[in-house]
Length: 350
Ligand code: NAD
Ligand code: DAU
Image (cartoon, rainbow, N blue to C red; front, side, top):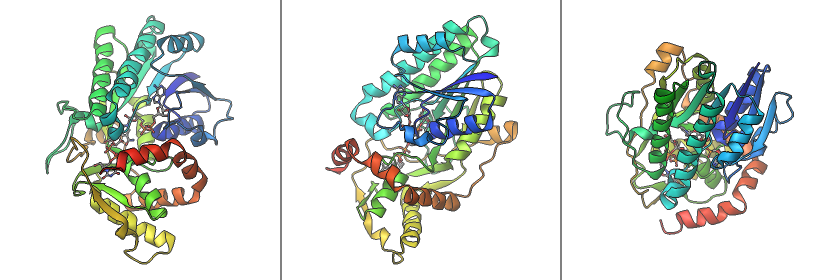
């Protein structure tokens, strides 16, 4: 029996991690802590919400007292920490929210773990989920490894880099069992449509312009979200204390090529003429400080823990499109209300 706190479990990646742990480990008690911001959605977890080994608590990780009370109430064996403000464009508009949740929120969790686990650090684990964006941007060649120096550029990546440093500091200073993984861009079901792939699917479906920043030359390394959840499972159970693992798809795509592929898939799925959806592509003003290229070298994870991505991108993208087309109600719910004013502000003057 293990009691595991998963933070941010109502979000995109977190909901896949919660589902995996609840289903695969019936003898674990999973507590999902989430503030339910605009990105948190309990509809992502209806299939597991009544399981006896699952509990949801609505807590803001910037609230240290609430976290301490939860640690006092539940005798956690481990934390898998995903809760974060996660969208780069929002961090450009309001960096402070990212400092509060990503830095202060992480430190609040570390402090609670430090206090409540102090007699037992070797039996407990704090696993922090981070991003490849902490490494900055690559030119045309090269890949990020676990020893690449941190060089974040956006307020989002700066806040994630800061939280990574705090996690390492608590390991080095207090001897806590901490592990970190840094992953590339995820895609798949339940992805909030502020991010490129679900935003483009939603706009193509509704015959709206598909905004591509700059010339669409930026490169991202895409990984299916369920492969990320599986990597988290493997690292959580097998990584040695203090280790860091890079997770990535070895799957680099220029944004414009990805969007053309998506348009082709959507033409087929929606019964449109070949090339019809691609007419929606609209080049708009670039993101400030836009990192040119990310690429992850995940050799360490592959060699040490035997993890490899399971899905080809074309297959994964088609599955993702199928999910969005089959889950119209989910998409309509998350794109009504606040999403409209966000979209209006974000894209009006581009
Ligand atoms: P998301 O925005 O979909 O979900 C974040 C979740 O955190 C939401 O459920 C939200 O309600 C919750 N949350 C936000 N602020 C909170 C607070 N103050 N207190 C409690 N809960 C709060 O994000 P995601 O894409 O699922 O990313 C999850 C984690 O993985 C993040 O730490 C992110 O940095 C990291 N990551 C994401 C990607 C990616 O491609 N999406 C890649 C690598 C790493
Ligand atoms: O690399 C991992 C990161 O991937 C995670 O840490 C972040 O949480 C996650 O949001 C993601 O960050 P990106 O900024 O790479 O993802 P996004 O989907 O916002 O953008 C992907 C690329 O597409 C990027 O080069 C910007 C571009 N883009 C994005 C949007 C929203 C567009 O061209 N048009 C758009 O409308």
